[in-house]
Image (cartoon, rainbow over all chains, first blue to last red):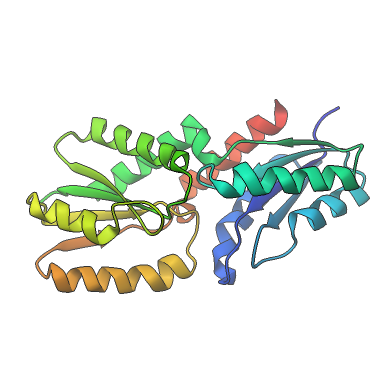
Length: 124
Length: 124
């Protein structure tokens, strides 16, 4: 069974403009996979929370969800807070197949894209 | 005159492993531009601070520095805290040519790289 929902999980910030890049990623994913529910969720400051986003996806029928932490790197948020939150969510939704992707900084292709962007910027 | 130093400015975290991806970006940049000083600096929890990294680069002779905030998006850290910090640094180093790049999430090519990575991960 293929993925039915992608939940992009970001840190959140007080400034509403902070969320703009995450909204662009969401739109790009939705355009590429129109049959998949693509949602944003936030740890702090912004809504929906991860719990609320998962509950909404599940209510819409998603049983197989990929959770994408849009964090630069693995620190306390991803190594400690997120597993606790996921465990709590799985208690609430025991039949859910919830897979958690690594951090952005764990993807060599994204690190290379950042390196290339810095090189272009530093040459401009 | 070309850039003499690139300072990668990251949020910082309590967990030392959090810095690993930033170290990889630093290494990739240094390999691509061996003549440029490439340094990491952190806002919180980790050292050196941005002030210390700039002072070190300047002490080594860099007059033209590109500052790269390795933050996902522009929030209070980049829109409020960083300009104040840069102003303070420029008071300390008035002859420095210090250029600040935008956030990672302001680069369409990096957002696309993230989207592509999520699509691959969600299909796996």
